[in-house]
Length: 332
Image (tube, rainbow, N blue to C red; front, side, top):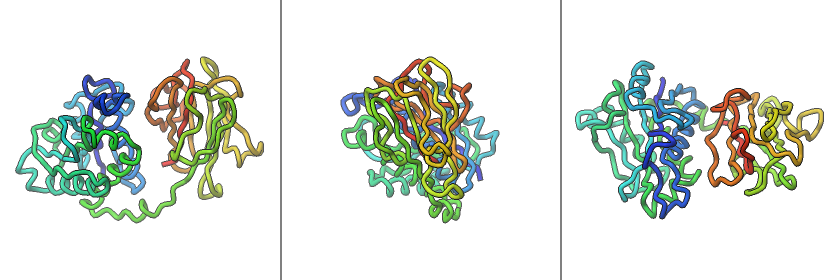
């Protein structure tokens, strides 16, 4: 089974953002869409379901709808789910299919499952399954639906959809709808033990340890110059965390392996007092991902899962020449 997952639009698509009166940062719609899409893919992948992202995972290019549909059709995916966030002043979740014929058939059945599971997980108002002439549900040859995960210009919805907690819930609902339709056994996914990561950062001091994404390492407004972390548990089950940082406008430093399992006992990446501007992280078990917030910014950059100092898009987190004041790491 292969599922095409689409985060609507791109990072720089004109007009697609949260209303300023409810979100001072005017968060771009693609940021919200991609966060949910990434989580959906992670849940599906953990159960052995193959996924194909149809958008540009960096957000830099708003890939045209024709190309997205063609890529889905050429890959012969079994289902396309396009993820969006709404506007127009309403409230709640709604899901679209192309026409009434499809709504009354298998496409409508799966769209209803996805819609209702997302509503059930989040507690948002159920606006139901509707029909509309949209390219992503019209020009794909397999069942396809487009889900609007809440409104970016509503006093009730906007603060909710901005949260990580909401993204986790709505992604879980979408994935559960897919699993239910395909009668997929999710016992492995539901019962698999998550590998925890413990990490911390140094700016003017070592700040407290963080577990996964319960918080972030570092403190706002102070450039990070040191990072250390490890997987939690025995090596056979949890593997090791491996990481490397780049000095501000400078070279990459040497690779560090799991501070508490290394012979050094408590090693770290960086040179204290010398800010870093890039970090890459990998794990020997599971897939590590990392994201950073740049000094002076309010939002984190997109998650990165690659490990390649020569790949500025997905090989490392950060931008050369820009100091970092917060880091988040987890294994998915």
